[in-house]
Amino acid sequence: MSSTDFHSVRPADSTSLISDLSSGNTTTEQVLDRAQAICASQGAKLTDKRRRILQVVLQSAEPLSAYQIADQYRDLYGKTLSVMSVYRMLNFLKDNELVHRLETTNQYLPCSHISCNHAHEVPQFLICDSCKTVDEVGIRKEILQELSANIEDTGFALARQQLEFRGLCRACQTASTVPA
Image (cartoon, rainbow, N blue to C red; front, side, top):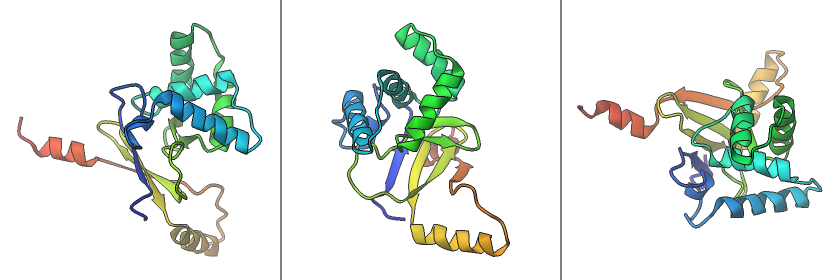
């Protein structure tokens, strides 16, 4: 694991999760503009509704389900979106590497790499069962290739390569050892 490919998605105490990931000067609007540029470079269009869905995900303190996203969208923008529409937009955002879907919980979180410019490794997710923090940690492609080869040797065909680990983050571990 490269030390430069670790990003934490921490509960937001301001306007954006992503602002904690870079220099601290990044705003939600700047991240959304970067997402717009990423889509444009791939020949895709980040429509207003998709952008607003991404904004809901960016501003959340924790990963969200499509139902939670639909509710927050309605609360923020005063417009109702069907959950199926939210899923379609989330699939677009996922396909363009702007959000990730946690397989174990069917929840979505922003890709912590939207606002950085270095090469990225395959993400794995460290999920804190206590505070719901999700750390996105890159895993070297060589490790995944070896793991995939071992799996294929058994005759099993992988559909996806995503690792999710559950436990307690450092802050929660420390908090649980501090006497009350």
